[in-house]
Length: 251
Image 1: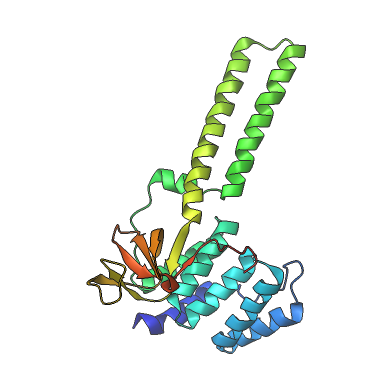
Image 2: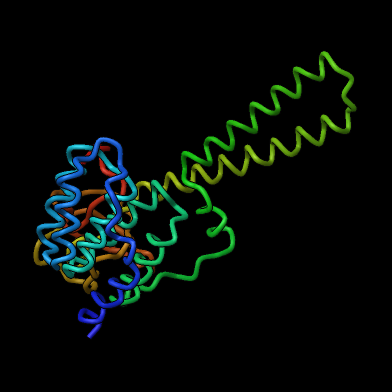
């Protein structure tokens, strides 16, 4: 039942889907062609064109969002989650991306552990934004120290500036490291068996559904050891997962 309800729910949340090709360098005619295919419920054609646009022009949050919507409507949950997650790396606070990702996960029974307050704070900014914040704090501290050599600035004020900038730089460093760990995460794009050893015919620890986020570890042949968001661990075929951040930044 969820599979049939999903297109109806997404059609409400993606009312702003047919946006103009505001992405620099994107072929407007092909973009509109993809939008038209989506409007006609020809989601496979829309997917192919959006994939082509991304391959030719690189990633943007808007194109990834449209691609994810198309995958969701076509019933490809894993690919939908993957591209929503990629879009969030570029625009972490976009309410449409966050809303549709949550909708797709809920519709397919992919429930994550409740996020803590610190995790919410962590995702207020992207990794690049956290790096920029830390860099700005370092610049302010450096300027303050240089000015203190030329001007009469009270030691208390300099101490306050130093503490504030140090706290911001520490927070930025921690956030950047934590987000970098998430960059190494992958999404299960095809439902697969979770095995207790990396061999065909090995005993299974159950199925792992598409759309699950996993962190990957050691590899053995065509298998990789993974741990999902719920703490389940095991071996899975490498072709069943795709990294959120691909090795090729354009494809």
